[in-house]
Length: 60
Image (cartoon, rainbow, N blue to C red; front, side, top):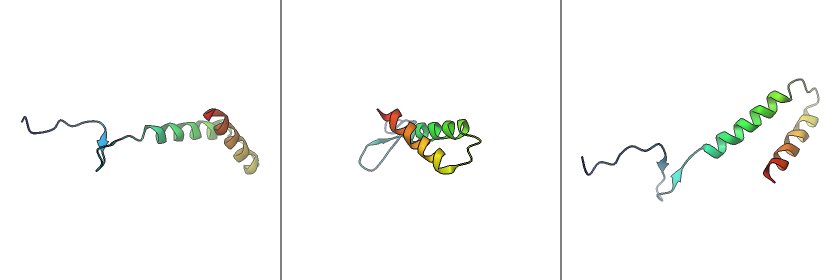
């Protein structure tokens, strides 16, 4: 039992770097929240520009 490694919540790749999808999940959550808030937009280009503007401002 001493040679066995305990299971961990995060996987490591072949280079030993710990991988997590937290950043992607956070981005998806922000995108879904913005899509929900923009329900009813009739002009897709206006919605797209608002979405990109809010994402750009969130990174600052």
